[in-house]
Image (cartoon, rainbow, N blue to C red; front, side, top):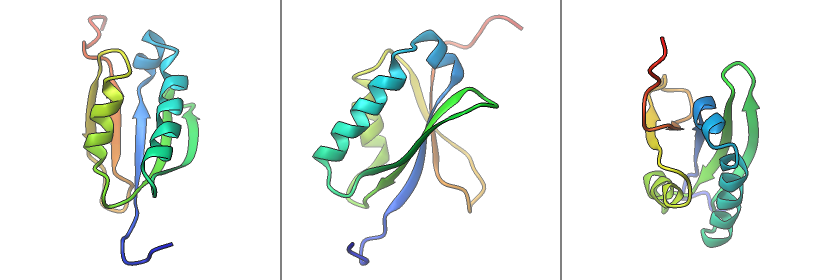
Length: 109
């Protein structure tokens, strides 16, 4: 491993609401990330899990410095139903987090 280029570790999350609206996206995103691994050396999915408390699906990914996470998200958004992707504010020691969610907000209280 090349130590002169630090690898960034990020968390990609899909909201429960988005998964409920489009159940097939979990498999589609897994496939997309596998293909991205083949295209971009240094990119790797460390783990994939479902967070039971929130219902979110999470991928923890290693991203090389030459790859921009926002570029990855733009490409991903072309392959899945319309969504809102944003970086979630976290405390400094935590991994950078990106959330994919539905475009519209729920109208029920």
